[in-house]
Length: 313
Image (cartoon, rainbow, N blue to C red):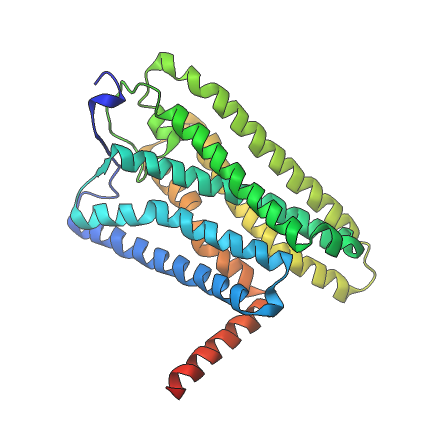
């Protein structure tokens, strides 16, 4: 196959060849997917319906849940359908759409996590200016900037990747169309065309990471100076969920793309891809709701109202 125009589909990596294992994979992914839909859906509904949660922190959390729902819906349903139908195929246009949507949503989520770090910094380090710096218009602009950054990043990356001739066949060694695996199919002399985009990506990722780290250095410096233990506990409770989500997001992504080639294998790449593409969207709602009294109260109120309406009918 001389280039990407000589075929109209890609073959994805199956989780297993045995029918029983394929059905097990379908069941596990279905459970994870339903958990992600339920968790993120509840957060979106609670934030939208409860006026007490109409604050910058919960506005950004609502956006995060939307991005999580989108990212897991981009990869998991197709993998589940392939296991159920005992096939590996994904169309060329479907693969390009999957690459674009996944990059768009993941890049937007990383940008949004950076914005959320700024929100925590202002809330703790500059509380008197919180209403001014994070008014409703400013929050909408920052959220729009995060979504816009993801869109432009995905557009550039996808267009560049699918313009590279593919000389190594159409077998993608991953359960979804992943950029790293697609580039392995490219002609060796064409890979340099992607190098500039990769460098720009690393600069963006590193810049956001440095901003988040510096924000938390200043946050913890201020928190440790709070005289009362109750005040310190409250401040840490505000930051720990976001810090846990960032740590999970960054650590799994860095391991996936920066692990030494010597330890790389299809099985390990598959497990790592599940860890960074499937697990975070399902776990994030749990992280944010475990120690968040306001969110738990809103969910309890939403549940009670739903039950009451159902019983009254």
